[in-house]
Length: 359
Length: 134
Image (cartoon, rainbow over all chains, first blue to last red; front, side, top):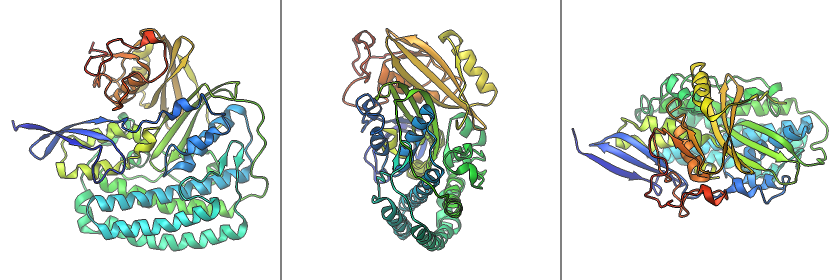
């Protein structure tokens, strides 16, 4: 038996923008076992709910993550609205859907850039992020923020998008799609990229489910699991099917995210075409009493908010299970038996968001 | 209501059998979470199958709380159980991968939550096993 060596990976590593640690037990160049550690930047945001009013806590929820900030706020609001029986106006649902899908597009483009950077394709990384900037410009034009939108609130949304701006967004989106199509060709067809992704980090159909994986990581293994099919926001009135692949490798996870960019653009077009008139919020009175598990599909997969109220202005419990947390067991499984050189790529293919995980 | 969310009460003794039954029916473990209510911990085990949601719920006294691990049924549960141990001080018997309070790499030792002092092991030094394998 070859000599075993434990190689520490992270919390500081070139492919890790945020800190997570893996102890990699290696035999020569093969990883035999990977042991994860988290908590380097644990912020204890769940406890903060005991001191913040449930209405203003949406600002904290949005700050759990800088990439899917809007969807965090949306999930929190949906949970409170379900608990309190608040009927959110349809227009607000549609606006939430549009901002949520813009978040998914810029998140996937961010990930594609990081992935390209991970396997050393720097020009591809720059192209991915150059296109992403234009999505952020749309978000800034409609919300005033590029990272934290601040538009979602309990009972609806704070800002509207007028018809002219909506048409402008669709024109810009068509241009973005055209450019994305060019880089997707490279991600899916370039031989040097495929050499790093095809057949690497295979997660079987059964393992992905048994390990509790979510999002593109699960769908790349053939599971048609997409929380948007629950029909929250405007998704019950829009036409789409979860995007899946069956190979369960890095290439499949990349392909799912690439296709989801176009799917999100299509959902925005559908939402814009069906955008109803009317108010964008309702007045909220009273305090939440009861409990609800709010489930929403973030770019990285299903996020769960458990909210429990006791009739006061402060919630009794606020618990978040983020998609990255759910995908860590799957990551540990794919790392077993991989080449040491593939570890950065495998870590990246679950699209880890540690700031979410360290809520 | 976006979806029905049935909550099935179980006792700690029934937990493993109930989770095994869901595993046999191909439910996905979605999360394990804890709420501190007065002098008890309320523990939720959430599952999903084809976008249907189900929840097992049990209560355990906060003092010297101890539960059977379900990580032998759902391997991924090791992460939730170690997290709960680090944040709330609940010990799990039979954990397949026991971090002994080291999953969360924080300067403050476990548990984080402001639970009764009696819950916090007095020997909570990092090297002390908090829940030896069953």
